[in-house]
Amino acid sequence: MNHILITNALLINEERTYAADLLVRGDRIAGIFSPGEAPSHKEATVIDARGMWLIPGVIDDHVHFREPGLTYKGDINSESAAAAAGGVTSFMEMPNTIPQTVTVKEWQKKNELASGKSFVNYSFYLGATDVNGDELLKADPASVPGIKLFLGASTGNMLVDSEKALDAIFSIKKLPIACHCEDEKIIKANLAAYREKYGDDIDPSFHPLIRSREACLASSTAAVTRAVRSGTRLHLLHLSTAEETELLTPGSDPSSKQITAEACVHHLWFDDSSYLDKGNLIKCNPAIKKASDREALINAVKNDTIDVIATDHAPHTLAEKSAPYFSAPSGNPMVQHSLVMMLELCHRGILTPELVVRKMCHNPAIIFNIRERGFIRTGYKADLVIVDPAAPWTVSTDNILYKCGWSPLEGTTFRSRVVTTIVNGTPVIMKGRLTGMRTPEMLSYDRK
Image (cartoon, rainbow, N blue to C red; front, side, top):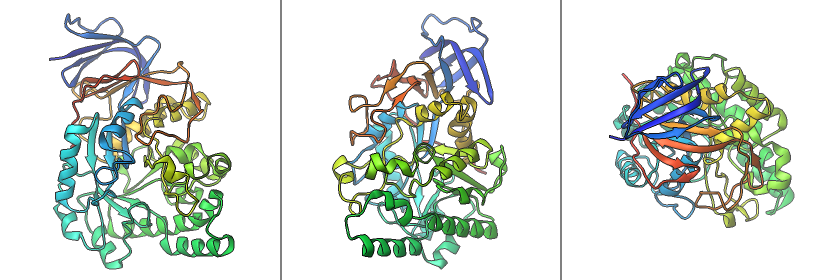
């Protein structure tokens, strides 16, 4: 049995920050000790974390790793390696692959792929369609994170717009519904108007006007109304407007909420002024909007109106993103950089490390009832990240692990660096580099 002893760390966990040593035995956290008081183990690998932060592994509840069917953009191996390099020890992946993950059989195939390819723990949503209600009812709540519902068309177009189907989906109580909210009728009308006025070659800065705030608010409002009426657990994905935050109730305990919400790192980092330099590289759905929206989303994270920070990691090739606006796909790669992005906001005095840990580690585990992860607790799985908060580095093609090979953050210098990532007691990243070792597990959910 492998042992790891982490010494002299500054442990950030459950709203506390304190000096500690931590012992890992096998795949579990064996104990948390005052510095110098951990029992010695001759066979233990000792990691001196002096001057560094020790946090739980990040759980990203929203990624698109593109396998199967779109593996020229990314795959489970490449994107999970990038995730590990960014301190993400567990991911929950979306169903808009080829074939789409809308049957239990295709869901099982994805798990089989991940068991041999992933560097980190994995889980896969089952996607809703207008006609797959029977498949959704077959889903095992102990191993499926939730039902992904597209109320706006995006990559892989899985739009659900049948009222009968929506009524059936929202009647399912055994799983939360994770919802992409954009009103398709509003978007189509905007799209036609801008195409008529400007032709086929328009500037990407029009993206937040085409996939508009009105489209987001109308769809989010409808989803919340339907969830309240049906008593369904709803998780709103990637909020992008100030108005949508007003649909939600602040509260620090997400387990008491019927409706929870997520913000994605790009909506907390960029605003519409960024289209000038980044263009289609930051084209995503829902669109990055005004600076006032970014500030409202940050405030909603801080006052516990928004519960989770995630990525919506969605790689495309640079050639695809370099196409004219109407041809360029939406989505950008983020999973390798999400933690350091949010810690950079801590350096700027906008967020705190304790808040980042709560939103990226604790709350995903609470909201989705993930078993024995998301916290540093004795007996829990040893998913751990060591961060050096004073090790500046600059994003470049030389250190990007995404299969697509690019990032909209290229040239950005971060003051924090992920040094070590441990997954189920196995060091996957050591001194910032992949070890080649992997012991991933399928996430399990404690739902009664």
